Image (cartoon, rainbow, N blue to C red; front, side, top):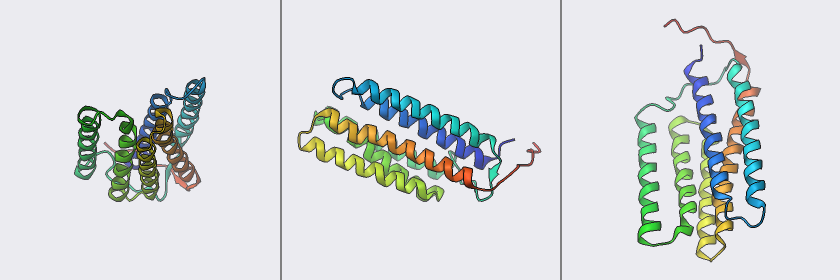
Length: 192
């Protein structure tokens, strides 16, 4: 039986791969020429490789230092996700509806998701999430600066959107490598 710690790592990595792929696939469409196809295919290939690595880690015993952190349950997690949702949708309503500036939408999403990872890092005591959050926040801020200076939408989305997808992929890859390097132990069957 899986214990909660391994299930959390697997679920979190799966979420990272899926959202990384979404960031890449959705935000590469404004690139010139055949670049959208190249970026989308590369994104799908990397997602497949990460998923294969995830399967290998899921089959491995639980890392000795893995500690259940509450994962995707608990009040702190849902508070962070709730605030993130309000910030995302409220900000996008203002950006698109009130201000009519859709070029700022992807940077806003990157910024909010980045801040959400910084909060999750504190709640879950996972330093890797803090670094992911910092990188995504910076990508969002760079995207804002690019949009404010009139950069092409493809450039803004490449930096803030595709860059966020790459950051998610990188954090999943680093997390999987760290877990693979941990000594493992077999888990006792759950008596329930």
